[in-house]
Length: 210
Ligand code: HEM
Image 1 (cartoon, rainbow, N blue to C red):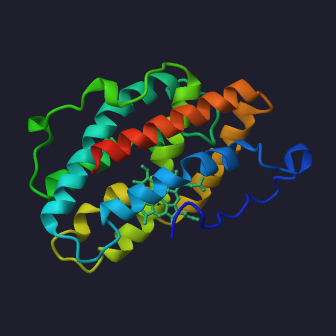
Image 2 (cartoon, rainbow, N blue to C red; image 1 turned 120 degrees about the horizontal axis):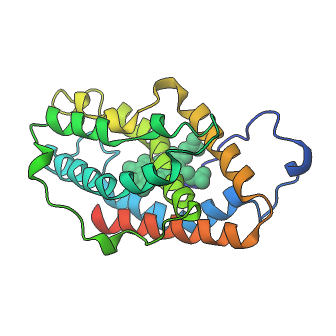
């Protein structure tokens, strides 16, 4: 399974954007990040129900460090973003990661921070949407991860990061796509910058999660 898996279009999304082609921002994002998604998915071993507990702990620490670097920047960009479909506060991940780490017996205060240069630079919404595409996309595969670990007595209670939306994951993803498509519109420069930021963010995840 991976980025090639079909994600259903949101209902009622016809009209001017009905004939979405290769230039659609969501198609561009998926296409441009498919290879790195495949590498991350294959390399993590996260979907393996028998993942060693130590490996899982290391990966959760890396997710925490990534979001520690990203979340304040996204907060600054989306804190005032006026579109209820975006709902930035509901998309924060650090609270859940902190809880998962604590369940695993790890105190986040002692963790080192990631080198700032790992995450792409940028303080505008093209960076914000590129990064958000990656962090929200992780909640799709996350459902599979949480499901596979649900029988692991040692890990099942430390997977809340992967299922932040319960049974609303599909709706939250569709909402993000609506906002992203609306914000990018037909602006090619904007689209290219969002794709570049998404790829850079994905590469940062790959580097931090090895
Ligand atoms: C073992 C780990 C992972 C698995 C098994 C996995 C699996 C999946 C699956 C099945 C989908 C498609 C969901 C659907 O069609 O409804 C998906 C989409 C996606 N995943 Fe992952 N994933 C994993 C890790 C990650 C990570 C760590 C990230 C981010 C760094 C990520 C980012 C994304 C993105 C952005 C999408 C949306 C692709 C699109 O544009 O359609 N995934 N993943």
